[in-house]
Image (cartoon, rainbow, N blue to C red; front, side, top):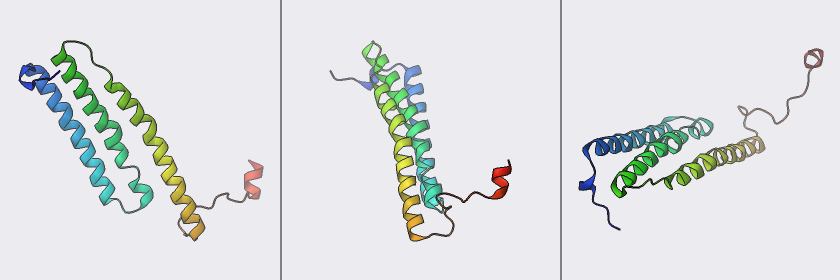
Length: 125
């Protein structure tokens, strides 16, 4: 079934356009942060803005658009949001752990050791 965007009411077009712009803006901010932040560990946090907030806004815009156009509730886009919400933190954690392991193996001085030795002060607490 082909949908014609001309059939979209003005109120829905404004809401959908606003959500798409918001999602694009959040994704752009995440991409700029990815480029501008100096270290890998700082850089891996920036794209999560685009994948969480940006994707959420675009998914919501898609749900509103297709619900209004088709005249029935369309919510299957929620699956996209759920998959992205689940996979983004897992990917972030795996990338960070791999980089941390690499940096520890190479002996980077700024990276904390795997297990800090216990001191006498720790045992008294």
